[in-house]
Length: 229
Image 1 (cartoon, helix red, strand yellow):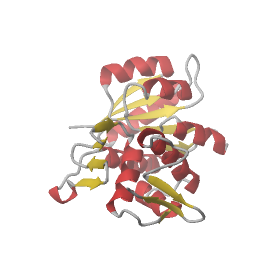
Image 2: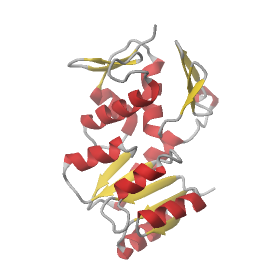
Image 3: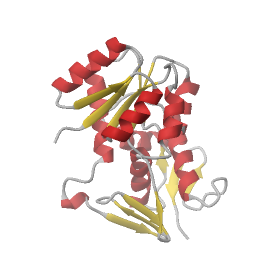
Image 4: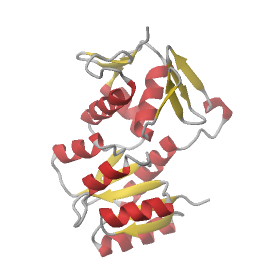
């Protein structure tokens, strides 16, 4: 079955270009011209992934993301013409999984879409259908559920992938570059600061006190590791 993509951009020419190219690549595409339209479309269509412009009238991409993340953890790739690092960080902090800076190549965009969708999908083979239990934390790759002492935690695909990577080898220290490569695979764009933002979001969800993390700890000058009592 074709994956459904929601393209949110106020420029009709961009909508048409993305719709035609992505349709040719086997996706079902729906479009919206601003955040308000996107909220309605996302609720009706339940897309598998959202391509989201930032600068739009009526409701911008950041406001949409802040609103929609309260409802669903659908993967989101930001389409940003802005080059400022702060804009990318804000988007990631609000729950975006990745970003592509305009102008971008269409083949690159499709590769990024496929990479993010892979992180969001259930494992295809039984060997990947693992259940990790480390201390009070359980991560089920098949059902994509995370629980801490029976309390369910809702994570974005990127947060889920990072937690899984850390939990597979508790105590091992991963550099930011290690985690970036694990997260993005063949995708080249992204900075190590991206990992810091995702880790901060992950801690806010799984730690009782994000300032004194119990599970995801910083190894200063190196990276991060997963620990348990």
